[in-house]
Image (cartoon, rainbow, N blue to C red):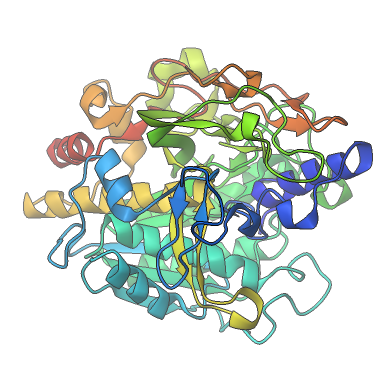
Length: 514
């Protein structure tokens, strides 16, 4: 689990600000639930029994759950598939057939197999082709909330189980006939202390084991500057050898860009303090990896805020902030002020600009710029995930998840669909995707939906135009934080890359590529 690179740390910081300087939120209204720092689960307080609130329903959780929310929106597989141009799921859907998708998470999930099977049955998809592997040692699921006091302890297996279920179920939602592999490692990613080398060792094992053209998705990351100055380049170069071995056999690697906007942490004080300047994370900054940023899909609804105070003094949701209108279809940069979360992106402090980014040198400067592409990552507009793990702690229910951890496996899955088409055309897997999508000849106008600035309602937080993080003030209102973000513009930018894949055009363009 990364520290301060993603959702949980950012939300905790926002919550502490409220508690120390103004009306505190009730514990039950914490913006997101504990998870990994690249994913976020919508709070249970946003849901209630159907009919218990007269407001219009924004989200209904399937059976056996059945609870609804009038403020937080959610999506089923068919809704996301329709938005991005894919046909509805059926038992005979063949998307991803013959391809392998490898998902990498600390700990994995003890119920991933049965949970994805239930997910498939609920949404009328084909039988999943799934396996869980533990190449560097089995996981101790008897200590779900940590066994020890180190950085990998307090929210270890339980927090990562939700991440793993998210990755598996939503890779399946996009490419349900792919062979989906969940790699679990026995130590959490903790800013490179233990977990990063273990994860890279597991990926190296998978590169050797799985077929040429395998697509990898990595929902983890660590602040570049947490590695400390010049030593970071040498450490990353060793890790990059794994990616280079995979690219040599036409594998493709995706990584989440992070959920803390432009914020990062330094090496000092156990990586507990944010930097005073924009920063990015690794491995998404590696030139051998395709970085996936976040957007907010508003499909069938449109946010309409008129005040920047997300929660009332008693902890209830302020309808002036959460207001929405029925109808509409848009996709904005992901930046949710109510939780202090949003897409990572910016300029690497370690890697120089790769040759294939020379066409966007005016944006990235002399450094590697991230992300390269983007996909829905919002919590308000999150995806439904089923879980039955650790029932004494979490019960059996559906959750609503967001974060760039939701983005990366879905883009990986669309790429697996493209690789299936390439295989049918007698071509190898796409390999280094960046070299293809940045090429001047690549038809980006049909392959991607460009993401530009959007304005919703009349409140300042409704202007979604960058990845500058928001903070709570003493009065409970949110305001932009001190670290500047990067603008979302027409064409390539440092928040959403080239935009989100338009599945039919993206698959066609990758199939036609050399």
